[in-house]
Length: 347
Image 1: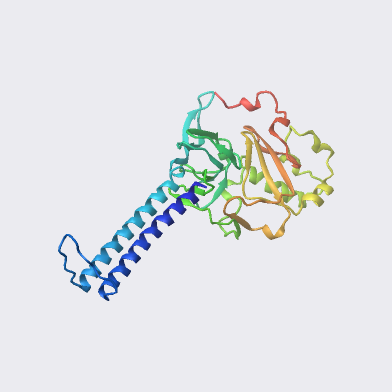
Image 2: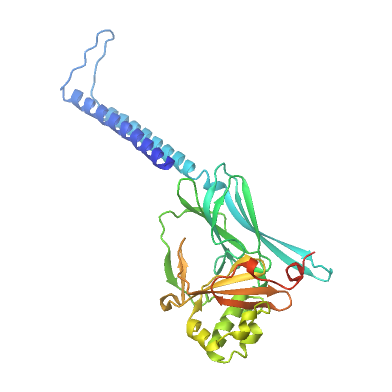
């Protein structure tokens, strides 16, 4: 609403200036054609017409209008960016000794900071390990943070989610949010700020080097690798013998599962490209059976995926990620870990 009011005021100002110039030009033209006469009562005045003098005057007025218009645009742009320009996101890394002091543990934290005097809304982040060539999602950060209050910083530990990815450089994060005027902004990994209010989300095809997981990341500490292996075995291991090594010991229901029914329900499903971590040692991966979306990724903001099911995985430092369940969503507080599992590896 404030943005619209500012635009109205700007339009009125410019209209008044243009109208004034138009009236001045008409008066000068009428004087030149002697349609009106100038009578001087107190100060002697002689009017001498000069085309170049008139042109110079009009040029000066025009330059003034352009300067005022440019100044107004700059002022309007700064006001529009006043909140967004002080919202930022970054990732910090630190190497800390483990519990017994025998090795270093590489820790990583996502920071999202709002230094403005107003809140921002619907904040979402996306993490990259290679300067934006591949994106691995929000990780431990929520898919969408409804409100980031004024003068507030949020932090999300992504140490465990990054264990499955080999990376040498510090990861980077991009941040998307909505300002109080309803404008959508993106703070890119290089710090640049972009207004993307008019952009619409859409699906695009994946390139050959944009697979959900790279060969170097195929390990038990990568939940996407475990999920893909599970789905592949679901179609090739009718009795579930090879799958058992991928199952979470915290899930008792696997001993009574009908593998044929499970294959029928989820054998043709494919995972979405990102893993969500609602808790440090719990991961969720959405599954879709929409074949038109296979081999594609979404570009843009707020694109909804109609998921058929969700794969829930649990983590331990000894075994890596294991499949806890497939189907409905399982909340972290509904999973009972063995004593000491959630504090293992902490100082």
